[in-house]
Length: 212
Image (cartoon, rainbow, N blue to C red; front, side, top):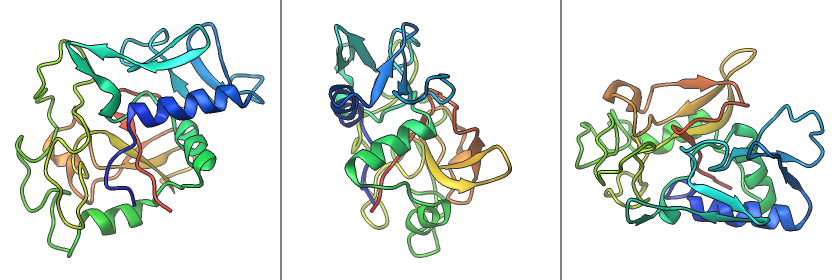
């Protein structure tokens, strides 16, 4: 499992490669789709022209990562990506998404962890509860991967950061997300908390982490 959540730079690289290979299309509204999705029913990603919460710009046929408030957002976790978009990234590079139970086993380390950062959570250990440590002027209030210490098996941002997509099914419509986000209160950042959403959902709180 990756030590870090997937970054804007990594997802931007994927988008440019997929665009070059003719695998994706960007609609005039700024949403990215699989080229075969002619009904535009399963968006992969929302660029900045689709939402100000996106950290990736699409101009002149090329994707690039934003700078804002004096910060390069390249090493921040990617947001505004659906489950379909996360899966497309994984398939392109030969990765997969961890199941929710794989995710929990890693986050819980030796079985004593309440959070992915140990028994307690605080603003010195995780990005949660809209703490906005960089003082960004607008959402999402993300931080670079590795900004906080590693815990357990040497993992970063298993508590807070962004909710991480999994392939695990909660019910007939929703998939499970884990870990909480920069927006979440502490209760949603525990190793046992199960978030959920439809796989088409695109949110400034949602990202992903890969494994093999």
